[in-house]
Length: 284
Image (spheres, rainbow, N blue to C red):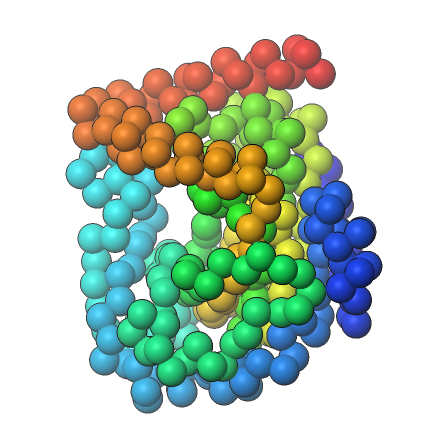
């Protein structure tokens, strides 16, 4: 596996971004895209705790993908302030995942803004993500197939990306947008096709924004306890249609078969992923 550093740009113009990154679907780190947001200096852990600490938040743990009744569900709720204290104290695998804070604190919407770097913004889902040091977001691509502009606050995240063409080599589970390989510690004995993959990586710091093109896989490790927000823009009508199909197959097929078969469904997906990777490896 080869990992290539992602471009880091300051003062990137709209025209250059569209021509050199958006159209060719190439990731880039903006060091200053969010520099005018009030949130960049305002949204400290202390501010969030003092104003919103009593909110109940859904928390996911390392068993998020475990087959069974809690498959890809949050089954733990805690006070937001308690969770922020937990991730500040030290390592934890517990995360807040795909949480729209503006549903509970509408006034905070004024602290961020859709950049002028491109058009087609999706205002409905400005999701936030929180994690403690060492927490991992498994390799996946976003189910709705939007472009993602992922801005981090205060600490550091290590992010690895792969383009969609490498999906079979990444051992994608059928009927999902998931893979269970670790690109930072690849197990070549179990997943030999990873030898042929080429990824892109970066460390994301406070106030920086990573552009993740539609359909690109991402694997995220919280190097320190921290949080991020993702703004989304629409891609082509074809990827939007693919997003609708992803959502349908996730709820109708993947979750349905998980309910019926449990661990046997996961075993089948892993076996199919292995077969698909072998075919792709021989074709390469």
